[in-house]
Image (cartoon, rainbow, N blue to C red):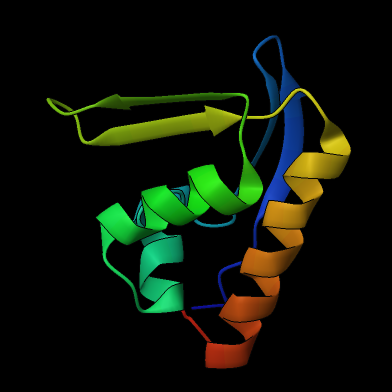
Amino acid sequence: MSVWKASEWESELGWHANCVDNLAHDSALWYHPARILNITPAAFVELLINEYKPDKITYNAEKNVLLFSWKSQTQMRKYKNAMNAAARKVNYQI
């Protein structure tokens, strides 16, 4: 086990940030940041939209997958750095 830590990468959709350290144990599930922050998934989506302002956000209810990305690496890093700091603070293990 290790502390959840988001990495960053760029695709044709933009800049992304998520934990990809342990995909076999679902490290990249979209609701880990909600658990890190101790808020509901719905509150996390509101926070994401209002505070971190991704340029693209989509949700597939059938598969329970939330995808979001930014055009700006700088904007994405605000989210990534805040989530990594919060995960370290609460020692959120994956």
